[in-house]
Length: 413
Image 1 (cartoon, rainbow, N blue to C red):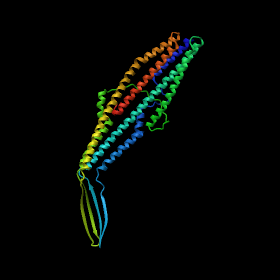
Image 2 (cartoon, rainbow, N blue to C red; image 1 turned 90 degrees about the vertical axis):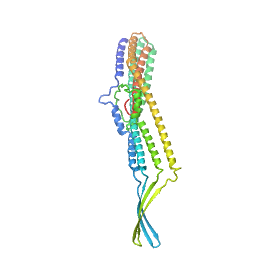
Image 3 (cartoon, one colour; image 1 turned 180 degrees about the vertical axis):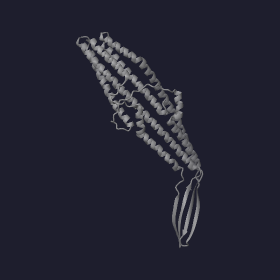
Image 4 (tube, rainbow, N blue to C red; image 1 turned 90 degrees about the horizontal axis):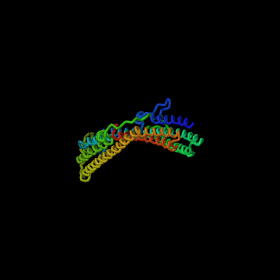
């Protein structure tokens, strides 16, 4: 009787291993959720991306404004001197020194370029975050599936241990240990379910959905090794990273700010043309004046303005260097994580998990004929379970590290 029971159990173990290796199967009629579709939806609907786009559009509208002359002033007046009555009307125009408007336009253009890079960086950051949450959720789904399979096998083991205990072939502690492990699995499943709901809400937040909106079964993820070396990724940083490009635009803006500050040493002008109508004498006249704004206090104003712009440029340049060092360190850290994950994935997939499968099969066969105790069989099952969880965890961490690298560089590593 015990051999027949364990023949059935052996078949369940085989199905358990196949289900783990093949992954989840979507319910009938339910299309799996594709990461590419989520990315497209986030690019279209994410509020952070849309707000960043509008800030870029706003910055572009500033450029023609600062390059345009100040609005002219219209003058209308009345003068009464004794019997004379004069009506005055005219127009005045402020004219900055040549080159000032051009520099202001360049400053605004560099500012707009920086905000453009901020927009691209926001897109990359949002998509990287979405991918990280997606892979975390995928690992949670895999973990739930593996633990549910473990629970089924433990329940089968409990029935088998009860049957063997009833005929005196096993101790009662085998039954109690199986029940304990079932309870532990149920506790872990409850924790994973809470985690699954939190990750669902996080994905829906990124997609600008309601937190309770459903998400179908996730598409399977495939192992894709990193294609570029560390030196190649470091070279890509200077060429493609919106984070670094944005800070570089700020340095260029500071250069234009210095040029404008030096232009402030030169005077601005105001031209005024005034018409005069003497109502008593029935006579007309005109007046043309040129006003010049002299930088009389240049020692404490214009010169200090240049010093301010130079110091600001140096600060921004140092910020650029600091950001570059930070990004290089983040690239190195993520590359190390990718390399570790790739090594562990291959080791788990090609050696550890197959060995664990053989160990479980051998323990099952030996327990059926009374050569090993129940604890040995249970340990073999739990070891396989943890190895499978480690495999899917490393798959998720591998994908997350690649997503973070793409978020830094702007291109797939």
